[in-house]
Length: 88
Image (cartoon, rainbow, N blue to C red; front, side, top):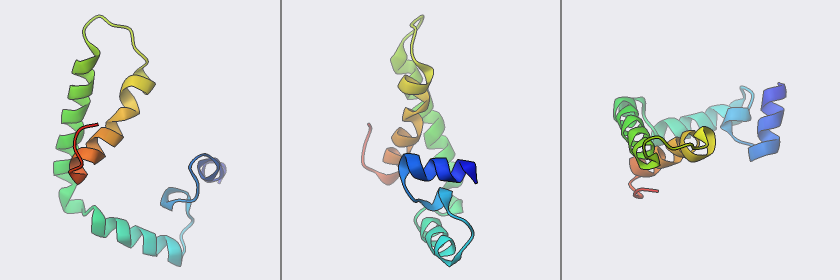
């Protein structure tokens, strides 16, 4: 429950912070329509490719902030590509 409260404080009410309820089931069903499980293999491929692209862009023998300059960018980059809005 502490994690859900913190999540709501940080990013607002969303499906990740909801308890099992009719609203949660409704939100979950919308997400499943938008992001079907049948696309999971395709999405995993995109995540791997975007991870490699971002890592290659950091250069060799460089010091960088792993979370800020790499890990936090992977979900946004992969989702942008999955949705067809281009590279970010």
